[in-house]
Image (cartoon, rainbow, N blue to C red):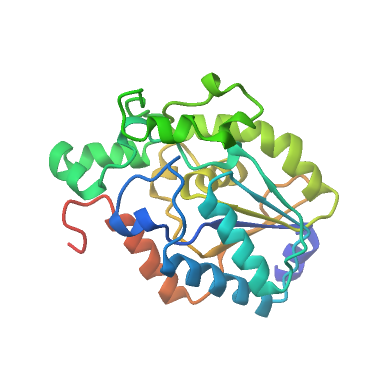
Length: 265
């Protein structure tokens, strides 16, 4: 069977959720607020690059969001691999999910206030949209007055004010189909250095994960995900999280604990 798989596997695609950000550490919804990586996040990205280098992987093109933590992660990975010259293309369509009015709130405090079930629905459900952000929100101006959002392929007033995971996938798909797919089909090895939810949305599409099953798909920060795809870009085997498996399981649990009122219980 392994021989069969290697014959069918035509393309390798790598997905990466950026290393820990300053707000991941504080357990707050970061979303479209432009946080840099924490010191730990920098180390995660460097370790990820070293791991990819040890495996002998070579990238031809890297795609990131226009949020610094995603771009920084790509830089650090490429630097650790000695592949700084590889082209990097950025788009808002790979941004993290827009969490609307929840941006900046601490997940654990919110669990105490609204109940863990409601927070889990907001975080994990496929088509439930949090309340939208408005002008009174403390981070509204910081996000929408930022020059980077003048450069998008839609006018600023048409950019999301909140999103479900379903809406993340809907804004991601045109970019995937029109920009990334042709690169992969031309034989390029692509790394997408993005965010938990933009990576989960893409995984849902590629692996045909159901609306309910996607809730239990957790991606830890700084762990590369390898997808082996056939010529129609369908996976020929399950996704593979690269690295030490015990460390990966611990990292997944850490992400899952973020929505609990008392993490660790």
